[in-house]
Image (cartoon, rainbow, N blue to C red):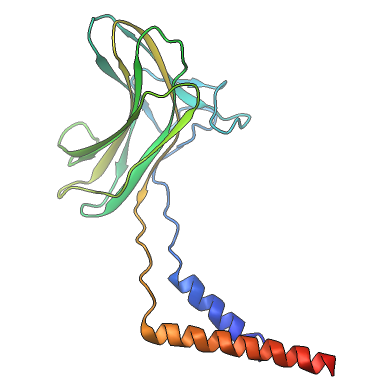
Length: 215
């Protein structure tokens, strides 16, 4: 037991300085078999296309017909999620745009902090991620964004922007919204000295055990 103690203490110190993994606040973020948990403006479940190719999963798909000559953005799906004002969050998702479409297409993942419980009113600050790249799942990820004062919900959306008249299609998968985890602080001088002592002790015990075994 004496031999193992330095290693146990060292492991405890390392674990104590490791950042905790944050929880994804999005319900059914990967569309596991359906679009449950989402409000769908015009999106449908696509069981043929999934970021990981997992059987039984799928993605959200939005087909949009732009009748006008200019660029038009259409809401595909959304989710209203409780948040805490003043807290930092990260958000994102994956976007798939097939090539060969009749019009230029951009896929968006957005988040808007809201002061209303159902995300219908009280829009505060927004953050937007987008891509127009085609033929592959494109991951979109934000840096920390701070929930505005008065925010009680975050409205996360997938949106499809057609650059001209015609039909466009965008798929989404693996949405996320989570509290931003901070970078662990550097250890104090006392902690650094203790780590050095433990490493030295661990090496001494290992050497003693090896020498005793050889004898």
